[in-house]
Image (cartoon, rainbow, N blue to C red; front, side):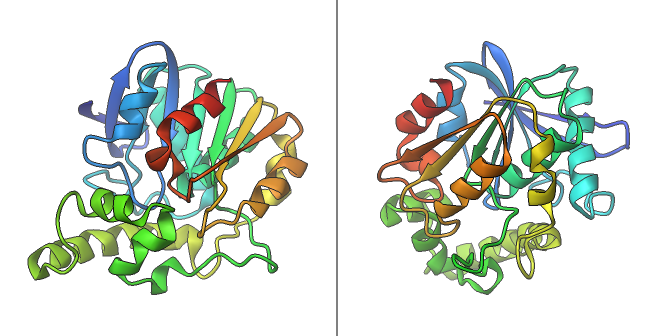
Length: 257
């Protein structure tokens, strides 16, 4: 993957990863950010030209002060698309990024050619409460985010050990920064009214969920599907919240079919 910095019209410096060739697809990551040498984006690049902007507060992207709510996050997303010189791209979002992508497609329904939501947050159902990420200890994250816990430990730790004090310190510092930004949208519960606006989405939409998602129950797929007129749902066997890293081929098959 290639990496570069762009500056939006609002003056925010944004790290953007790019890979692949084909129709442009903008990918908005979730609370874990973009993985090192991200294997999912690399695989996605076999079908699309992928642009993966790093959200404010993650890595070295700026804009934490400017992006302080759902509306500003959606507008920031369009500022990034404009800075990249793209017009009506495919928009894909995972987790937190899925919530922002849904908001973008609702706010400007004619500016997205196709919408792909991968286990998006943004809705709350008392019958299936979403676990509190902000009370989760680092060693608990792999079991919450992945169906394949061993793979989750390897990916989240980038080959390091959560029991190593030096690595754990670095991880906690970076995680605190990421969670500080995510908290603007997900704390105390990840509901900022997106459900009320989903009816505005015009783009053909594919909802993709891991069948064993322990963070955002697959039952939320039904809620999104009922609110978005032109939507289809794909449930991925053996996938957790991070299904795109566990069963990559199945997720890509679901989004390109």
